[in-house]
Image 1 (cartoon, rainbow, N blue to C red):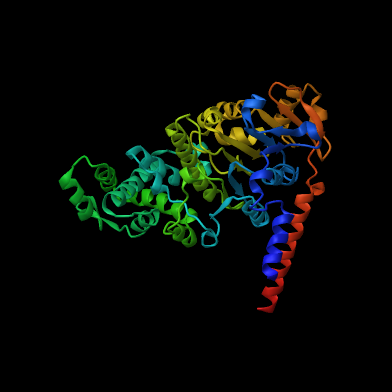
Image 2 (cartoon, one colour):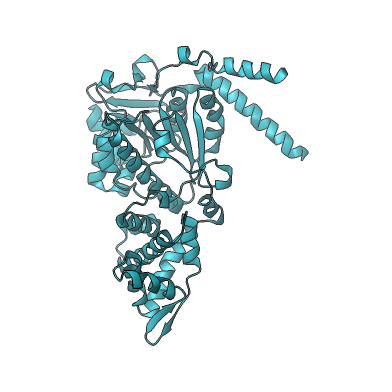
Length: 451
């Protein structure tokens, strides 16, 4: 009886009584500052704008508390894909979203065993070019490779070897997963014999070759076998090093989990997908960006299949520290067509220069031009301040030395708004959520001490 009473109190507290949800369900909103003039509808037919938002602010400028957390508070109907590096955000907002009728998925790349869903790149392979894309994404998980002047031969050869392994696994294994590919790579042994490389997998690939000499797996593996032994060792070392740095034993177990992310389900049912990344492992961030690439591709194709060409449920991606690691494949092309599919993004970055360093100047400009809303929260980056100064038509020093807590909001078709950032500490729902979260944390600590 007591449990039922507590449940009823909590339900009333967060305004999500299941029996009244249909009547009280609110529309999604965007809050990007202090006051009604910084509150916006997400209905593109009303605003005439897309829902893409670029938030630029240095570390400590308030991007999380004044943009990311209000995003969750104002989410009622859209599906959510949210990348966070702070687990407290996930733990704090799951109860609220669940009470609002959201199905909760937790994809934890740092501690996969704590998550509820998994991501496997093999689930999204439908062509040989997809295999090459996955192999190359893994090889280039070191973000420095994209801007390196080193000979690309080693990376190309490593990509070819990994593509051969992925293709072989897909052709020969039932219910194959990415862990099978990593295991096959781990067990690869080779030596020199009569001027050629001999491996422990030769018979496997010879079997495929007997059926089709031009087999994709065979031709890629043959390229590896024809290398001089020293070159082959370097190629194998290049691939093995990046695999070991990205795919921890914990992450490998994720690929064998039964419940996987289903983008069609997410775009058809109100779902909140939380993605936990690591702030100290840039190689892992590159793997997560491959996930983004697959997400956008799957969502776009699913939208194309609908009668009206739009997703049944709008999907919004909140990406914290977006311009870190390496670029999301084809993102500058996808963002230009998000609106027609009911896809939108909020990108949190530290500076426009950071975005350019990852995507290149032209692609970064395309991304910025396709965000109809830009929120500047302060930065030490001179180039960013110069761009903002031109946009707002104010002296450079006014922008560069803007007071903490101030911001400049740009919306296409409107004059810039100079004001204060949103003060979430005055939000009643936030106060209640924070209090409940802190009590849960305190209780967990007491239990730990008593254990």
